[in-house]
Length: 521
Image 1 (cartoon, one colour):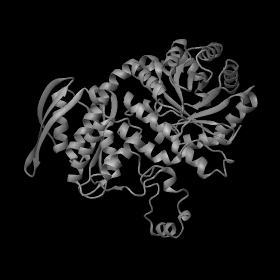
Image 2 (cartoon, one colour):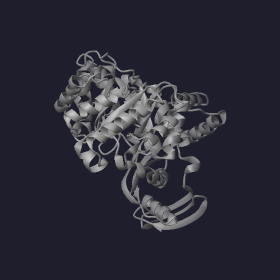
Image 3 (cartoon, helix red, strand yellow):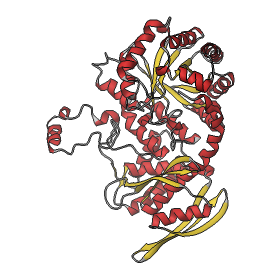
Image 4 (tube, helix red, strand yellow):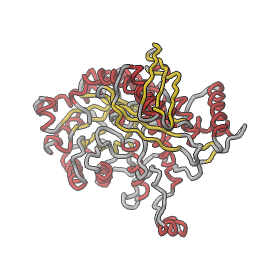
């Protein structure tokens, strides 16, 4: 079985399917570059036939990202497989990942297909995919609720047809560790030639067991784990990549010396980059990458850690890239060097003009703040290089707010919607509420605000505020972020960012809905 566990990252495919986590092509490319630096083995870059946007993102990643295998998902249909093959064609290392459901409930009510017909589709799909690449993965959707003998037969047919990786998804997060262990052992004991392929698992977190189930499978011989950064994904999400990797590293004794190719010092940075791209926050108590993961408030704990780190810390913060010192002193030369270093760390291609423009903004920020921190630089880089840019339907040119004691908060906004100038004035319960209502009035829309939060990026009252907004527009959810030393401006930026993503995602969903009838893993 070997002592290497392959990490298959599906942040850009399964993760991006979660409401509010959609990404533009540029953002997917930026994330893919970071995943390559992280050292994942496979990047599932998307579902090529789902939309033109998915196809373009996969194709650019295939052309521009080196190192990992670049993979596209495809239903067990020739048209899906052909589009997937075309999308990944430029990649130095490429994989087609095809799937079909094998559980009785899915075959009967969703596919409306007899078991023999499903087996026929498996044979034809895998054989067809092998015409485009030697690396073909097959997934038995809803495997954990499939009848065992039929599941064994489906896997056997996929291997006979040329599959090199067989994936066992817990599609609805139904199984538990002991049951999953028994299923994995059953596959190894009952499927001919199972030793000729890499066995994989893809676990969802509906019962909070995705990581536990994945690690149990590894203990029983599985050598590929499909997971996402921060555990994002449909419904309750997927197994969290950072938790899988660090569990294998910290408890190498328990897992028999198994290892991954992941550079764990890139974990924190990758987590935070995903947050900035998707407009999400990591909970403070999140394992491995949460702000409190290495914090100690209890006096007893503090005394223990100061006496000997291992009393209360089972891993070094530095091992996951957790920042121990965040202060950046911004000077005439040091600030520019810090900025260049950050751009290089993110793998961003920049011109001297880009560098000068952003540096001027950094100096302007330094005039407003006593100290500029690492987080400030990261936020500025995000706003400049990962915004929607010319694709943005809504662009706010100017807004003005009046608020105070005995004054009704009133906001006036001037914006452009797809190039058309619009203005509006509105009142609200506060300056942020008034401004958001003015934006909606100018656009003639009404959104439902699902979540709004704001926090200081750094210490002191002169800190930049980072706002996060989650909204719903005509049934489409999206999230956005905004950063500014002015909390009203940060909030407006976050709202407009989320609004633009919702508008753009509506069209994306219309394109994608036609292929969702057969589900995903």
